[in-house]
Length: 287
Image (cartoon, rainbow, N blue to C red):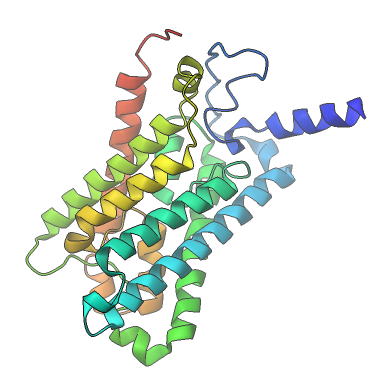
């Protein structure tokens, strides 16, 4: 029995980047902080591990469910003749934020619960996972988003789906492309900065007397960003979410500003990674 427990313990920690960031750096018996090693750029042995493929499947399913719930909510609001009879913008924001909370909670122990290529990109820049895993995650996230939006279209019907806009992101009238790009950069910075802060091993070790459920602040950050930027861009901050809706909608409205929903989130994620590595991680460890 002891041998089996040892195998499980070693197997769970062989590929540390698959664990919720901030937990793998601490042992069960020692709360002092130990700097985890940077993930290698390429990790060939990952390709022979079931945990690698299981993590990608988890990212696919999570992003599929994320698009399914969130886009259905958006279309329900758009469909109603008056916003007073629907959940409104606040409900859309809760839908996105609540699903991220639930899905990060469900998948953090399998894949890290990224559900967003921008989050994956930021964590890659911070050397939290290999390039191999980062690219794999992004592909699975995009495929999951496309399938999720496709199921919504199947429920709504082609005509009504197109009429209601398909949940596709675009810069709203009254705002410039620069406004949209800026909103996506800042919004994604808030999200990825929250991810780094909520899952930081140094902070968890230093403030171990203050328990924190990482998915909660991450989901709440998504909620708040949506409240602020839905009127500007419909809120992307997730390239997979924007891509899935754009491909299934497949109209000029969904493609005209699509570059904003990749460039903005990736810039925001890079800035958050830089800020975390240069400023936050430089703070001396004091327990």
